[in-house]
Length: 288
Image (cartoon, rainbow, N blue to C red; front, side, top):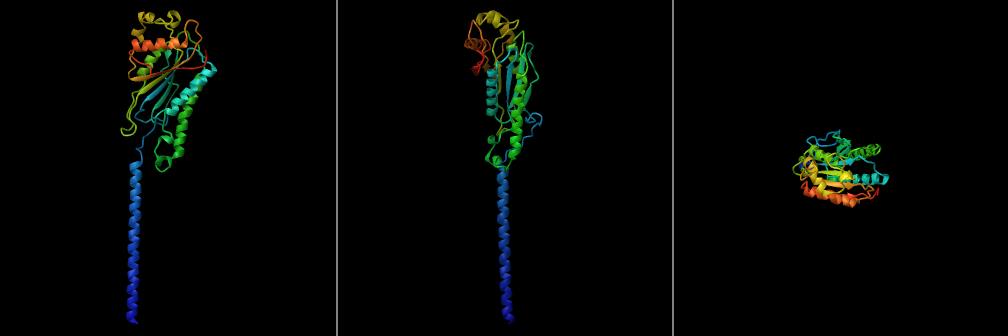
């Protein structure tokens, strides 16, 4: 009886030891898996960028700025306003993460240095990696909320501008464009690996009918020699090599020349007098 009891005890002790070893091995496997998962998330989670809550831009600055400059020296038809809205909406949709959109206006006194709105794209969910989209390394609801703030800010700025009456005795387009190109902040590297500095861009929404004491389309027409003979190149001449210039051209009813003639005239001036190329020109269909 004593021998049988001892054998039974040894068997129970062996089973207990095996169970303990199995529990230890299981714990090690689980711990290893957790460490591996943590390491994976750490390696695949993008660096946190501190944003300014007022404008949703990184604290160190934006990767680049798209400055929208609206010429408010003359009115827009309703269809032209809608075209401008759609084009600005496209700017927002295609804006890279941590780029800024700033909306400026010009009137008869020139550029309004304080933007109507200035806000950065904090990032849409589809601009982020799969882990963020799945909610593993980011909060999708918070991302959507911040991006919505970005969209609404620009939309409300456009509506504020379009509610105003546009009347002016002068149209200082060239000087406003020149000044704006100088005051746009320099692009910065938000993150050298993922979010490097880009280029600034100005989107000028205008009829291109410059009218100042220096040069006036209304007085000289589309006369390239008259432009050269004036002080316009000396006064407004500038190389736009550091910034891309795009134009949304508003049609006006002119008896002596077409909107396309106006576009060709200014394209030649930029090329030959300002040593710059306009990156793109789109003539809006409204207001003929």
